[in-house]
Image 1: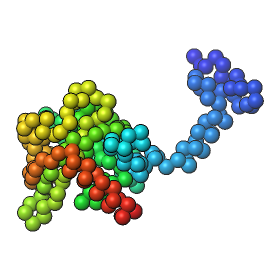
Image 2: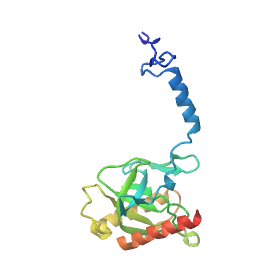
Image 3: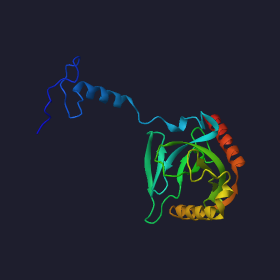
Image 4: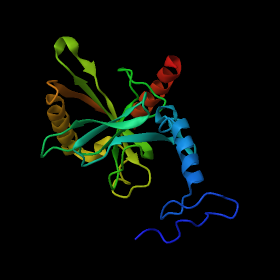
Length: 220
């Protein structure tokens, strides 16, 4: 049975009859269509400020791939949308939330990567305020084609499970070992080698963030 009030007007000032159960008139639908043609996707998160405006000691992180996901997501700057890039095999998933710091540039030309520790997984595009606790220095590729692949390790500021963690060493050797195993297996899917070069504390992590900010400004 059709909508009982199909010929009602949405407002006294509107001459168009209602068209659906949500009460959106034809004029409203036309306006929505016009707006959608003008909009070009999401606001580019790459251009956001790298630090929390309420607390400059916190870095801002845009999540690309959440913890527990087999799907690898990445932000496509040209289309301004998060795109599925890869699906991990059964039994393999991302152990933590992975994202990047906006308005920064690492050695590989991409934004500075961040591994985030938090209570529950976030989602692609989620903006977090985090405090850096260290950095994992890594290297990928074969001997003649090796490139650095470092990741900042940070704790989401409002979480409970990792509130006591101030330094990456507080997570223990098991954390580093498990993470190395994940990265080794992950890069193996692309026929690449990976190894951890070293673990540094929050001071070095903050230094790298500042360097990333400077590089982004120079490259702008």
